Amino acid sequence: MSERRRRFKQTQVLEERLAAEAAKLRDQAQLLPPDQFRDEVLKKPRQAETGAHMSEWLNSPGLQPPR
Image (cartoon, rainbow, N blue to C red):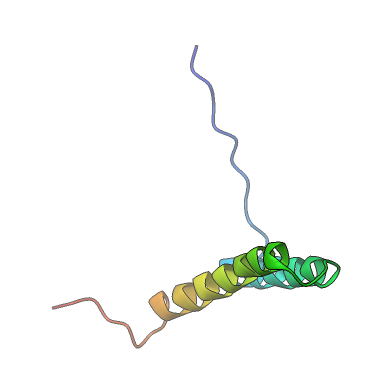
């Protein structure tokens, strides 16, 4: 018996989802006391923003495949 993979269509582009996740994580981190744990939590929004920038860069019209 094979298990079927659930598929669903994304309503937002990746960059928008990553930006929303980064904003949500920053808001949550503001509620924490300033310490090492808060710094660790703030790494995730930076990673999400970096991922969004990389995705934009990879999808940009200026980036052309080698000929």
